[in-house]
Image (cartoon, rainbow, N blue to C red):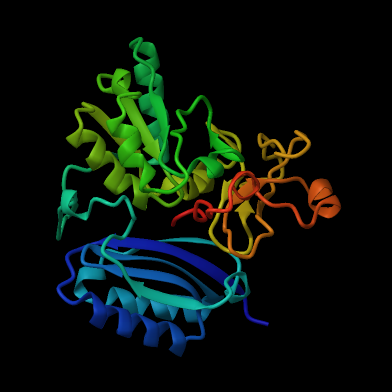
Length: 307
């Protein structure tokens, strides 16, 4: 049986015909028997695909043959096509759904006004330098709040967000204005959300903004659970989460009993996609559990985590 892998990737580049790229990408992934989710937008491509490693490598190689995607960087993790229910390739107005496509400018060099990229080792140096200078770094979580419940950088600011669209309202609310003159390091799963988030922050007056290059995935590859990261990493397939070592901290709490857990589970209501932290014991004893949003209202619930 051939070894399988999951590839996580994105590339910001102007695409004059996203629909043509979508058709090509769908045919390419189907040809190699891959499943996963690929988003194409006027600003580029974002995807996570899984399958036999040889097939995924062929897919990546062919995708890079298209000039706008020549610089496509890929982060690899263990997994397979079975971790995704199907192949989905869609065109959307934004690669990351902040809801402000008109505020994002992309050139061949990437997103304009994005924050300074920091490799994991450079992040550690910055943390030390700023601490010694008396202006400690503020970590700012660029994911949805439920993801931060099971894993985050120590002491990080976690905005009150259910979907990525909530970030703009959070930034405009004024609750983070005290951070505008401080060194702020944003982080997200693979890096793509921070490319846009840091630009939005700088447009709103944040003066010293950085982003973790390659996201938590690359940081975990470099430092595992022996650095500044604590807990598990939420992912967007049937694995639900992954750990970087056998000694990952458990920082989440079950919403039902309060016990420590790193488990994320969906609401049992088929019309709802809300995620909550629910331990294995409570999931077994309450298989028909519905989320707090469904309990409080019949008007629907927030969507599942964005990519």
